[in-house]
Image (cartoon, helix red, strand yellow):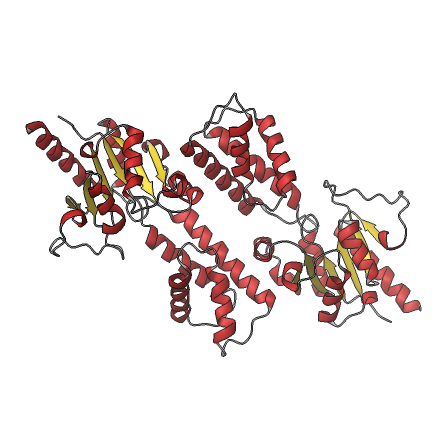
Length: 251
Length: 251
């Protein structure tokens, strides 16, 4: 018998609505610029910002700088912005963006209860995530789950990045558990499900309805690409734990 | 007759207590680390942080990273911190630091009234400052003086840095005024008073009692190093304006 001893989670878009929060924060930034006096249609401005996020990546710290530079180069109807106006707009946007990020971050409704129940069951918990270490830990502290998570594995710190299965093996080693004693919950086939499967970890695909929620069970995905389970609420985990424990017990 | 048409101000430690705010924010960061569980004497921790600020400069964004690294290398009684603890402490410190910086910034008591009176007198106002442009403009927006200042000159944007007198000349040109029609108010002989004097701008040394407030009139400073006036409250500016205008009128 090898019951489940560890459950790993992806962080962004799994424990909280990271994509939605970033999007809302970006729009708050545009709102702030318009409120400050820039004469631009909001829908158009948001479209330009989306292009920039796609081109420079969502982790760039200069989205609004690029936004203003692009307006200056391409939007003849706005006219060339003075340095003072440029900085005023960028600063206002950055302030509004950060205020939203700091004040509006919150867990999905099913997370806190699930983590507490796992603690009661003496099942260990880990977060395995990419991203900038300090930023990722800031999210964990703001979400107030620091005391409910036993280990945070940030790929940047280990030098092994998703989807490298060695990152998940590192986590197993830290807890001295086997893959068969472990469940991993994530929202991406490529970065979460595959490396879990390659380590014989029970893989759980979590549907959160976001823009990366593109896995469908009826698509013929086989082998390492196929999650062992699919859920849309974390409380379904407990049935899965029971099922796995029963299977393992009956062996 | 050439009455005063423009008054320039330094920003940090002149319009608000920048040094004090940074110091309070740094200590809030240390408080957060200790609250999070690090076993270190607060006075000792603040001392280490001060060393780091001196070594890496006050504008480094990694003071707390260096603080934790230094503890790991040098403080045997603390023991080697796990990556999780390191990031938890750094993230907690950064969050507390920024919260203090965002929430506690405020003008010196004499600033808003002075700027409003200058506006009523149709005297133009400028801020001439070094520093990171977006950060400097964030301060101006948070201090809510954007509408009371006619021009913000940030040296990083112009490519000419204090104490280069060309930075002040640039500002005179933008307003099409002469030095003799201008007053500049700052708190440093080297970066504020000298470049003002070299442009024939009336130089005013503002005593705010901070750590750079080291000019004393009884020290024999001559020529370009000597401010034309010394004040400890901005409302004294109006007597100076009257005095200059009378002198210029009587010529």
